[in-house]
Length: 68
Image 1 (cartoon, helix red, strand yellow):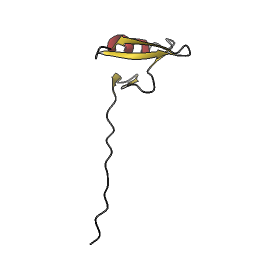
Image 2 (image 1 turned 90 degrees about the vertical axis):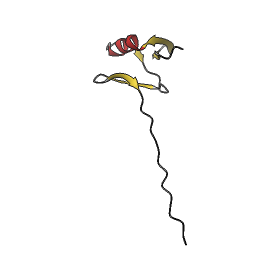
Image 3 (image 1 turned 120 degrees about the vertical axis):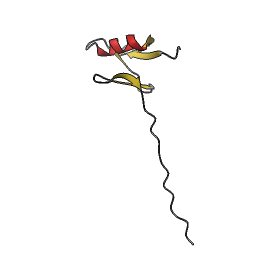
Image 4 (image 1 turned 135 degrees about the vertical axis):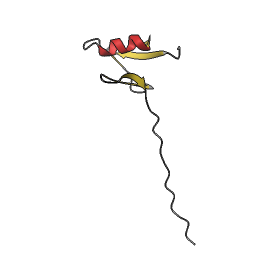
């Protein structure tokens, strides 16, 4: 898969296909296209900001102070 491509899935058929980012965004904007991002995608889409990579969720570990 080319780094500038996005995999979309067509439901209910379950067909997966890779598209260029621009074309994938156009398909996602179409109200009845049937294409959507898979659940495990590294991308997210919304109508305001468009298609973009997911931000990495960092977790912080809170350690208890050691007892003296």
